[in-house]
Length: 427
Image (cartoon, rainbow, N blue to C red):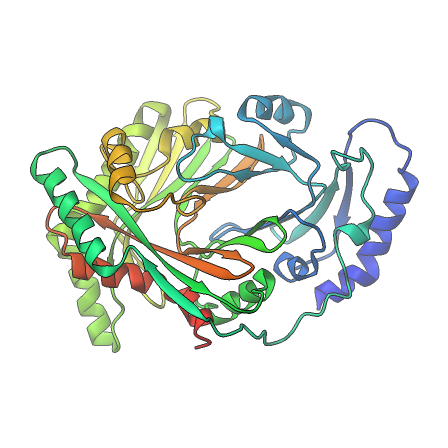
């Protein structure tokens, strides 16, 4: 197990490096090349309050940030890039926030694994202005179970309830009929309460075990002890490497079949149904309209079916060579929220969401990921849940266009929660 090798071989090197630089002035980071480390395993030994884990869906890239060196505003990010062009920041944005309103964090310990090369970059703690002892960030004695116990839930509620959901779809229909909206994405929540403390790390381990066949971004964000946002999202907002931009247009859903024949029939429905074609086309057209003026070259792939174990989606890959260097924060401002998780036109849809949805989304469906001057990757925080000590809130959303049927969308949103429900129900 490479984590055992890390604690046996790499950790003593880290301790020696910190000791030899304990009196170093300034805020220059320390850097160390490591052996092979599975950061998703190392995550389990986190001992600090702030933890951020991000594993890319299709790039051989993962990141683990421990502790907090400093928090930055959008205005301060550019200066950080100039001083530390190779170092990563992590996002803390809600769905409702713009990049100007968000916060960006530099962690004390920054593990980066790319193309099977792993490095650690260490900064001083922002409060103590010194390097934190390794024991404050990682505890090798943390018990990690091969099969975690998730306690049985004691209470359950749905928000909105079924009848209110139907009324939400009816309100959306009124907006379509009077020409105010072309599309709106509505979401709902399942909330499970517990009489025992729910361990976010144990839940995350079980989530990965029970969803190993899901090709997705894997995200664990703990802003404070006992609370964590978990996501195994299939949706990429974008990646940006120099001027090379990649994204996807993802919209339209169908169930998976119980047999190969049934699955093929459902895929054909997904590819040809008028409502699903319109829903996906709106997303693709909007992304191209926004990216076109910025791009020297813009390519849209033929239609792809994204097949997940529990659902399948219409997908098109988008690649662009941007005309000039545009920052990741500028792209977030331009693209978030896409019509896949917001609505069209967005300026109208945002006000309608506040009136129709009975809750603020928070981190659900927000841009989440890592930022640097040379490489950034942001996912969309769907297929997600928020854990607190005594409850877990699971989210699911659906794109609503003219012709959407409330009951079908209710079932679809429930299907999208399945990866988390398997853990909740110990299935």
